[in-house]
Length: 422
Image 1 (cartoon, rainbow, N blue to C red):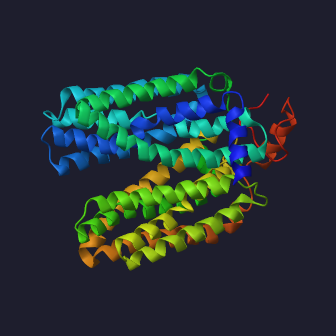
Image 2 (image 1 turned 90 degrees about the vertical axis):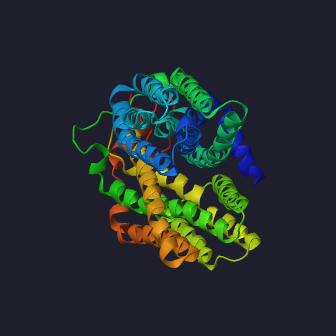
Image 3 (image 1 turned 30 degrees about the vertical axis):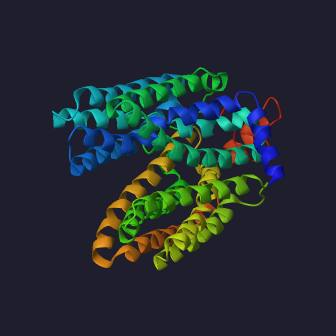
């Protein structure tokens, strides 16, 4: 683990790396906290939980639509021309909601739709920048793991920050402040030299864009079910807390999941992996599925918290490894779009998991809702197993070789794409 800590420190010491990571995390705060902030604001305005859920759902759907479209725009036009304007428009959508309230439902729905549709693809953009910033393949792979760990921290700290703003000010002020912070984060990223100078490799004109890669489609299919599993756990956790008559139990379960992901991601990034990442991803997803299955036992609170921590261990490694596979299979010139598709598919899967777990609780109780998570993990593994041949052949082999040959500093290792061609 000490070697891993040294490796992370080495990454953060690289020029621009700490700024890009911090700016991306801060810029993504509005997206990480939006569903929670929308619910708090709607309730503070006197709206029902049904309305709050509807507004949050529209935001989620709009984000799922906007991310790959904006990712494609980034690949075509560069990061500054897309990321910052999108962040500003998204923030204005939330500001409109805060100012107008829920008195006019069409306006409220339009505001959250705009906010979601224009959420900047900062996550995909950062992963497209890592090769240029870090150079060596092993450092980039470790950065993917570090990014996944930092994301878990953000999704824990973000809601706490919103809660604090609501407590000391108001729900509307929370929307203002979080989105202002998000714009500042995006501004920090796009003003950096790597973001300003990054250019995607020339791309073949095709209406499907990144989706014309069979390997990428296989990966997206698998991670839809990973998202489904995670989304179902959020509902199942609420049902479990209700069964035990303590709302605080839900917080413990979610914190345990986050802690497990934090430990798993840190350990994964501490090691330099060899061999095909596609094969490694199958093993990680198999372990992820095995971690979800014991949750159906729904034991006492202490044991259940421990099981949730175990279930979270392989989530961050799965995400980190998946982004390596995305980079290998994305068609030339579509890397940001491809990363954004993975984020979108994962989010859609989580939304579906949330929707499925609710009826599962009503039909069979809490154990059935946790069974949805186990089924999602198994389905993800089956997709990866049945598409082994498709995933075995990276879709960008020729482009990767060209990238290493054109690497003026000799930093990129053979077989590793840099996302930029000289």
